[in-house]
Length: 107
Length: 119
Image (tube, rainbow over the protein chains, first blue to last red):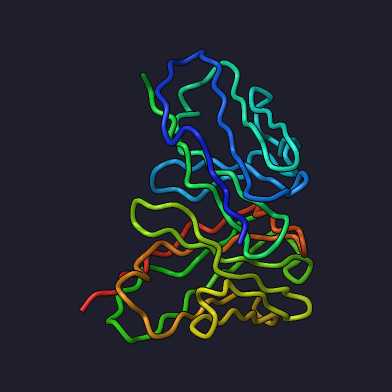
């Protein structure tokens, strides 16, 4: 199975900050990488697919980049609704696997 | 607006089975696959398997092979996940998610169904 490792596991930030979350795959997954966020008690929501394609309706302050084994999710100007847990997920092969999550908390 | 509506919470004893339903709306059911993902309390996300609604073929996580069965009823437009021989570590919220055929990208999710396994 492909292992997905996110860093950091958690971070504290303020409204307006720029943050970056990284995700590393245990082998090359080309650009088959998706990002989700999840708020407590809610289902995950797809933000970015294929490493850098922003989903319809997702604000442009979210962006993704990377290919091969190393990927990043960047949020410019963090908003109150962005405080959540973020997960990367590889769609390169089955079993589909997720990173362990990065919890973004208010400083 | 695409929605996936799941059945309600369940409490089961160890060794029992559970069957969770997922009814999508506002898209052509047979044009997409459905994946199931679970999340144990306070833990991350675990992919369980996928079903091609049009062809009926499935792909399961090896960890659950033999205990999980994914099915669909195209007459009612409903997907089902059955998990057998339940154990305490199967306690989790179970999600269905729309999964465009072959993509492995979960673009819409159900609200989740809590399954509690306890004696």
